[in-house]
Amino acid sequence: MASEKIPYKTYLEEKEMPLRWYNVRADMKNKPAPLLNPGTLKPMTVDELSAVFCRELAEQELDDTTPYFDIPDEIRDFYRMYRPSPLVRAYFLEKALGTPAHVYYKFEGNNTSGSHKLNSAIAQAYYAKKQGLRGVTTETGAGQWGTALSMACSYFGLDCKVFMVKVSYEQKPFRREVMRTYGADVTPSPSMTTNIGRKINEEFPGTGGSLGCAISEAVEAAVGSDGYRYVLGSVLSQVLLHQSVIGLETKAAFDKIGVKPDVIIGCAGGGSNLGGLIAPFAGEMLRGENQYRIIAVEPASCPSLTRGRYVYDFCDTGKVCPLAKMYTLGHDFIPSPNHAGGLRYHGMSSVVTQLYDDGYIEATSVEQNDVFDAAVRFARVEGILPAPESSHAIKVAMDEALKCKETGEEKNIVFGLTGTGYFDLVAYQKFNDGALSDYVPTDEDLARGFATIPEVNP
Image (spheres, rainbow, N blue to C red):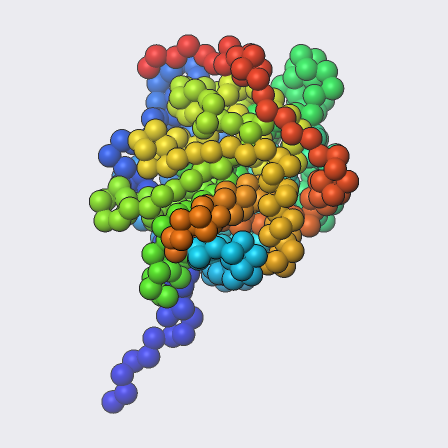
């Protein structure tokens, strides 16, 4: 009698695409500090979070003990359209740099949304549909999250209301039109359609907005609309959980070719890409099984890890969201209108924050022109036009590879290529024309943001 064969699709998923998300918090001895209710200053409960988020997502958000969550069949079915995503060795970049290092990148731009954001968008839309909701509201910076969510909502037949940071709304009109094509309603933030938006416009006339502003408006719109909930594309622990598919696939691919990465690099805004990429590697470090060097790269114009304060702060400018203990520049800090819109957030994920504070992660910041210079050099040899956000990681990966050239070390370097930059051509045009500016906030600029941090002593 012939032995039972394993279906190819199942075999492929077990070997290449994860069947479960990994919750790195389960292996952390020092757990991230709990979210606080802004009214009571007590830890948020599932019931309280469920007034804003889908119930099952609220449960995922507060669970710091369950190591693995099964990925529902409906989400895996969707993932199959673009996952597993490729882990690519950058042979041509290595040659151009003349480095003995081996440089790899995990490419998350091989889907219509053009970024890693779809990994969590489809999960959050699924739970909203499962709960019987009419639709969801959200914010978006560069537009990658809004694009991904509009696709996911279209797939499940949900309404999607997006508040897009005004400077990105104006800089990236084609990203906006992709969202509208998928059926989303897109509003520049701060707007005049919400109480919070009107207040911010009055206090900061002519502002280009920030992710903190857009979050406040999206939450207000969700709470004020029957059958809607708010969903977020970064920062939250539930989002990092969904994004762990990036790191799990990366580790599986390295294991398959018998390679151990020495240096792992990701851009850092709210923490979704970085947290997802490093999750299983950080887990090994936490369990004492392996050691890696992990580098978070942020824009010099919005340096929450490298120059921020580790305190409780509001997650949004309007102060309607819970308080999170994180590295923050202050919820009223509005970054300069740089072209890495997805990294223009005042704070950092509590998970990434705790790992950084405990010494498992190091951080650095880079200026905008250096980032685009690295992006262009990468595009010319590797054939992919990278997103400005991803290009922060490219810049530091190139720096690390050049250090190996000096020392002769054959290190294995991997970075997250979070998405493509084909909707960021205005920024590339400005760089090519020599018209792209660098801005680094002064200590005085940061002090104004720090002054808004609430005095909280739970």
